[in-house]
Image 1 (cartoon, rainbow, N blue to C red):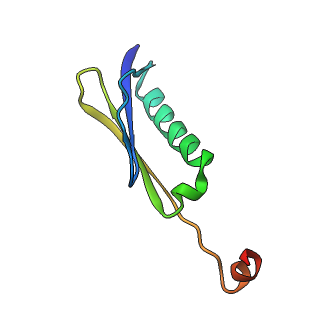
Image 2: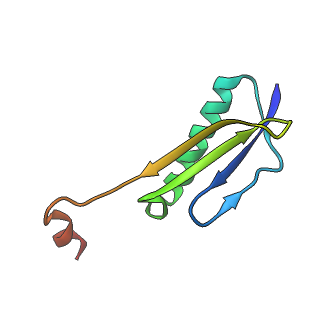
Image 3: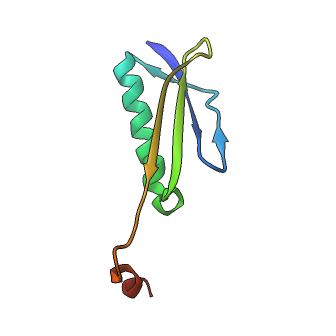
Length: 86
């Protein structure tokens, strides 16, 4: 298995993975990256509404090998949201 490093960034913060994660193949790398994006956004969805969350995966030689982004958007329709939000 190879070690990959998952660096996350949003509009306000960038986190560089110094520990890494062992992954058995490219599909495992992409699955881990996508799962992590969903988990991070799921913990604080209001923070990531209308904001991009990115992950860049690096291999052991520090080369970027995979990139993924999550863009959450939300919108109320007509007056429905205004009356319930008040």
